[in-house]
Amino acid sequence: MATKYIRNFSIIAHIDHGKSTLADRLLEMTGTVTQREMEEQLLDTMDLERERGITIKAQSARLLYTAGDGHEYTLNLIDTPGHVDFNYEVSRSLAACEGALLIVDATQGVEAQTLANVYLALEHDLEIIPIINKVDLPSADPERVCREIEDIIGLDTTDAIMVSAKTGQGVDRVLEAIVEKIPAPRDKSGKPLRALIFDSHFDPYKGAIANIRIMEGAVKTGDMIRMMSSGKEFEVIETGVFLPHMYTVNGLECGSVGYFAASMKNVRDCRVGDSR
Image 1 (cartoon, rainbow, N blue to C red):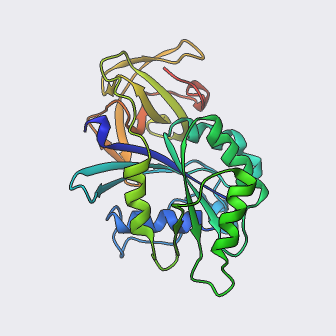
Image 2 (cartoon, rainbow, N blue to C red):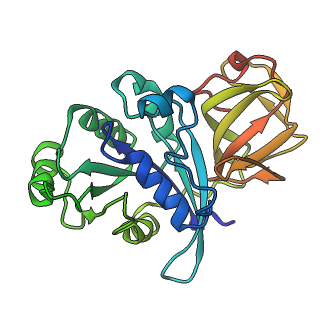
């Protein structure tokens, strides 16, 4: 797919402001998962995350969406931790994106961790789309929250999107805003491979699996890659995307988000934040 039809984004929110619920709704509305497959907080896969309702690991999902302009877009959602203890993970996730959805609870307003993550997003020069969630609740005060966002963060909320992630109200407008407002990745497909590792995990059969964003060039099975931090070289044995579960594909092109396996015996071989 041409880079002009790719959008890479994260979701920024304080704990309990509805980030995982909105992610689930986006997956559902784009048909990435069916109603039968839906389970609450689908992107929160770690047991601790489900138990405590917080996002720790940076999960990803590829959404295919036909926009109002008639074109099909690939929307790569890179989930970010909402807890203050996971600042580095947030920073790596944001570095893989061109934009971010800023979710603020219509009953709570701007909170400290929201602010910290927004500043990280601004440091990465991301396009930020303000979203006011839980507008269906009786205690919701979206006008006050919009004023807070403008006064405290300095973001224009004229086009802030009012949603209820729980009911799905307004989520269709979020999808259109992602396409219209978040920039496409720069087309650097003709250059040698350079990719950012924003997360990794270990598979007993395939070794370390690196979650990556292709910044320049492309990668496919059989390619030799070099880790910039260690200088070690590996042969790629598998590439894939997240649907949101791992799905093997022939290769990853410029602007894409996915994963690769290269018989790396230790996750230390693919350090988060490394680029090749």
